[in-house]
Length: 390
Image (tube, rainbow, N blue to C red; front, side, top):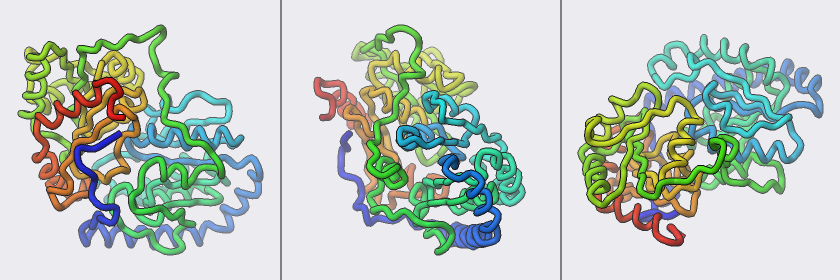
């Protein structure tokens, strides 16, 4: 994987608003209290489990997050541990079947992106979610790969015997986790998903890249080299490239004899075409009604151009020639790993990045506004050339 320009220096921090820092500090105090108050009960649960205690992972949000966690799950399974992953029901198929692996579906009611809803109902929802997770989590060795104090509270209330986390909320901002909230795994500031996984992996484990072989359609899938998948839609407003530039990409691809196709999730056809600045008569649009369909559609593409969103991680796991149009997300944390991947960004020129995709959508838009169509097409030619981006 390579970049058009190097990412910002590793020392660059995401500084959230005062209100966000205050909320995180209060959450950290709640996590410390939950740890101390539940300690005797959790210790009893851990003793009952003994050597049979599983590794427990809770991932409340996106498809890409679960794809990124897959190597960590497989590393613990290879080391002879049982593993439980709690996530949205749709993401259960992202980990290959294994007799020691259990997927615990989490109700979407507890994984909403809506910040207002999460703040209004967090404590009620945290208790309900913890009760639902308890049959799987009681006595387990839990890992929080986010440094998220909300997750710590849930894991303690769910009865996890031991909980490890990151010292900062590296995945979204740089809020420091309160001392004594949980044992920390220290990481360098130029954090990547591979380094996060390595920090929580068994000693000496070899971390593989995510695999989607178990989700591939039956038979041999021969990609169409003319077909270029375009993924313009993402839940985060600060990660969307201007529609008129997507439209220009589609027009130039068609003029060069390529076959651009807009890819989106179920019920998102109109929104995806609008995000791409195209109409149904301008470009083909295909909806994926689940993870398997996403894999099938991406597998048929000769290359993929996408914003930084869940399907990007699927395309990377499929080792597609891949161009990622990046706004203000922390790099290299959310960058693809494939040798045929190219990230186009202008974070150093924007001066405000990296930034929190929820807390400052304007920062992401400013970064994205600097990315030109010719840069993206040049990156596409680079990853499609013999040898890709190696």
